[in-house]
Image (tube, rainbow, N blue to C red; front, top):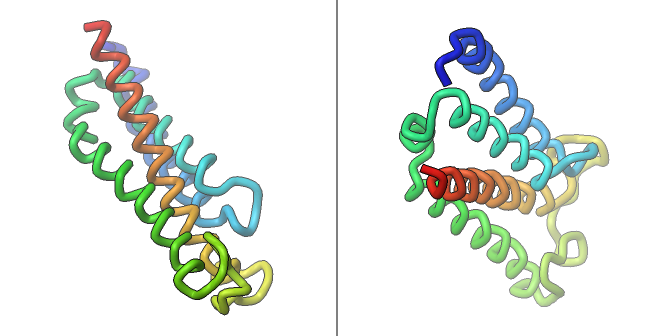
Length: 141
């Protein structure tokens, strides 16, 4: 796209979209949102970047090798957190019963392992959206 106004607005707004996405991921155990919603917002910000500046700059910003590794790490992180509950002698993704610190309700450090799980989900969703979009847009070239 060669529109100067669109590129300028995108440069201004994309960092705010990404900060908001990270906020949604990190506060998902306290308010509506979480890993899926925050990851979708983060993925959409990189898709917006690709749409405004082109596929080649989009690939330079988030190469396929990086996004596929983030996908893998995100799901492995989720599984690892879930297996901690089994290792402690309880069910998969067990939280309070396994003895994890739950904190005070309404604080950032609360929810036991839930904030850690949402990090993995957010990374997986964002990287999957980016990978799928780049794959689909490359087929049209």
